[in-house]
Every structure is written in C-alpha cells, then in structure tokens.
Length: 458
Ligand SMILES: Cc1cc2nc3c(=O)[nH]c(=O)nc-3n(C[C@H](O)[C@H](O)[C@H](O)COP(=O)(O)OP(=O)(O)OC[C@H]3O[C@@H](n4cnc5c(N)ncnc54)[C@H](O)[C@@H]3O)c2cc1C
Picture (cartoon, rainbow, N blue to C red):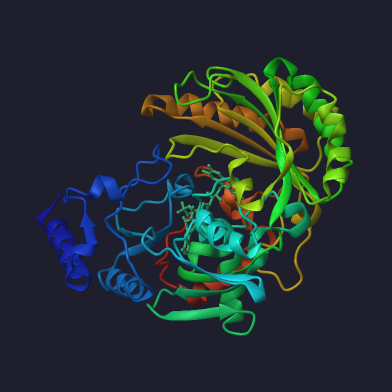
C-alpha cells in the first residue's frame, strides 16, 4: 500500500475515533475478528471498522462520523443474512452491529410492540406471551425483527396473516444525512414505503412498531419419518397442501443430520423426512386436517396445542452461529413431476436441509397501502441449505444448493423471497415491480449510496 493510501486510512480511522472513541474497532484491534463475525460464520466479512452503538443517538453519531470520513455504512443486526452482503466490498464501510440495541415494549391494548432495532424475535415473544399475544416471527428466534420484517418475513402464520413486513406500522430510522426520522403512513410516507422491502438500503432502523397477533396458543408440531419414506410423504404432502385452507402453513424437509453427540440419539447421523407447521384452527379441525399425513404412520408426532411462544422451537433451527450456504427458488406449482424432482434432489448428502415451504394464501396477495414488497407471488419456496464446516467445503456446498434449486427450474416463477436471498443472485429481481420507484427514492434519500444493504437497491 502506498504512503498516501496509508495516511488516508489513518485519517479515516482518526476521524472515526475522534467521534466515537473506543466504540470503533479497526482491523488492527484485537477484538476485530470477534465483532466482525456474523451468525453465518462461513462469511468472512472484513469491514473498515465495526461499531456497536447502544442508543439511537450513537447510531446518528456513527452515520455522521462515517460519512464525514468518506466511508459507507452497513447495518447488521445478527448476521443471519450475511451471505446476502458477501459480494459487497466492505473495505470502505463501517459495519454497524445492532446487537446492543435490544428491547421490546408491548402495548397490549393496541396489540402492538415497539421493538429496538437489534432485537431478536425471542425478545418479542418473551414480552408478548404474558399478554396472550404473539407475532409473525420466522422459524428461528435469534433472527432480528428488523432484518426479517423489513425484508419480507415468511412466518408459519403467514398464509393467514401475510408477510411480516405488512405488520410494520412505523420505523425510527437514521438516514444517510445522519438525521433520525420517523416514517409511517403519515410521516415520510415515501420512505416508509421504501424501507418496507428496501430495509438497510435506506438507513439504520433504530426501532420499529409492529402489530402483534392475538394467539396465546396455537396448534402446531412436526411429524417425522425415516428418509426411506420420502417419496410417499412428499406425494401426500404436495396433495395435502393443494387442499388445506389458508389457516395452515407448513414445510416439508429432508434433513441429513451429522453424527453429533449434541443431537438426540434418534436423530444423530440419520436422514429423516419431516413435515412441520401450524394450523390456526380448533384442535378437532386441526386433527381432522392432519389425518392424511398421520395415516402415513410417522415415527414421531408432536402436533398438539402449544403456547404460541413455543412455536419458534418447532423447526429445530441451529441454536448457535452456523456456517452455511443456501439458495432458494419460488415455485408457481408443485405437480407430480416437481415432487419427483424433490425426492431425487433431496438424496444429495451434501445438503443439510432440502426444504419445500408452502406459501401462497395471504403471502401471495399484495397489501393495499403496503410497502415496496408486501407479497411473494408463488405457491412454494424450494430452499436448499448446506453446512460449510471448513472453507474447502464452500465449493461443494454452493454446488449442492444450486443443483437442488435448479431441479425445480420448470416450475420456478419470477418471484424471489428477499429474506432467503444470498449473494451471487440477481437480488434486484426480488424487488420486482417496485424496483424503479425504489431506485428513485434511493436517489432522493441516499444519493451518495452510503448504505450497503444485504439486498442493495442498484
Ligand atoms: C436459521 C435461519 C432461519 C431463518 N428462518 C426464516 C424464516 O422462517 N422466514 C424468513 O422469511 N426468513 C428466515 N430466515 C432468513 C432471515 O429472515 C434473513 O436472513 C434476515 O435478513 C435476517 O435478518 P437479521 O437482521 O437477523 O440478519 P442480518 O444479516 O443482520 O441482516 C440482514 C439485512 O437486513 C438489514 N438489516 C438488519 N437489521 C437492520 C436494521 N436495524 N436497520 C436497517 N437494516 C437492517 C440489512 O440490510 C442487513 O444486511 C432465516 C435465516 C436463518 C439463518
């Protein structure tokens, strides 16, 4: 590196340190490797600096100091979506980790909650459950509310209640000029439209108001068979999903589980096929709906009425940071040929998870008055996940997840689900018809392209 470049680097670092003191962690600092590491530990993100603000005022200070130093800003809450950011060069960006900005206030009478920008779904569920309320969370409780909701958010309640983004009532957001502004249907409505889908491309959300759901309990669970039953289970599930009401949201997965001591013995080292989901129905009606699947004689059947806060454990997502490669396609239909393609593709042992998620229903219906993204047009999501335990495993892992979703090419539509997007994909396609207006609003709110988002607005 030339001495000019060195001094520029030093000047930028000095500007950040002047404004933010020891909050700034640079590549030369001992903590750098700890604070730069996202939940998806396969992603080797190397930002210019990392800052972990503890208040909205500190987020304002970070954005002002970074832009004054000529640096970009990348908001990140947990790093579950870090793979989407992986093909963005962060060498001139400050990674703003929102881990320290967590807290939830529930307003039971309004069935709403105010959620700080780095809060996890587990925080919301713990605060909402005592009031008999829950939320449109996804399958993992340690995903952030902001990153999930503002990128769409597909929940096991979503075929009835739509994407989680439609439950966002307002946001407090720090914009590219370092202002803290409120965006809602009545204040800065164009920014409110843009951030509901455009998320981190428009600023750092320091808090958001979300609608809650009035469910103290829910009928939910999972059915599990040995993977030798995959063909029969998949055929039945596909026919079943074509007939169930919108009150039922479910997923079909083949899991190839490694022989790990932390797994229960009945799962360790096995390949299994699992159907899990939730039914917003009475116990009698839910039992009646489940009959075709139960008739296949599952080895394990946990479907019953559970406290709604327990739904977040049903999908058995990894409880700790995990190195993973993923890919998805949205399918318009799942005819018998597509089911056969799933059965064949799911046998690849490089995959950790081969999944079909049933969407459609309210997920596919755009919300009048909704934001840039308010629906995903399609009936199923095909989602492949492979673990990347060592860097050398990355190539086969990416190959396996790509081959898995390519198997569904004849049934794949144009739509993409923003929350499931990874780097290396045409992520702008996820914005669909909203792209032109999003671009115009990006030009207005962030003309210097300060914000580096997982799903950038190009
Ligand atoms: C184990 C696992 C389970 C999952 N389950 C589901 C599921 O059931 N349904 C579903 O739809 N998705 C699911 N996802 C995908 C997940 O919702 C996305 O990866 C989501 O973007 C993660 O948000 P995050 O903030 O936790 O991650 P991050 O990587 O921290 O954030 C992702 C992006 O969101 C933006 N962002 C995050 N926080 C803020 C903020 N405060 N202000 C502005 N922008 C922000 C940024 O652009 C950032 O790049 C799952 C992912 C994993 C790994």
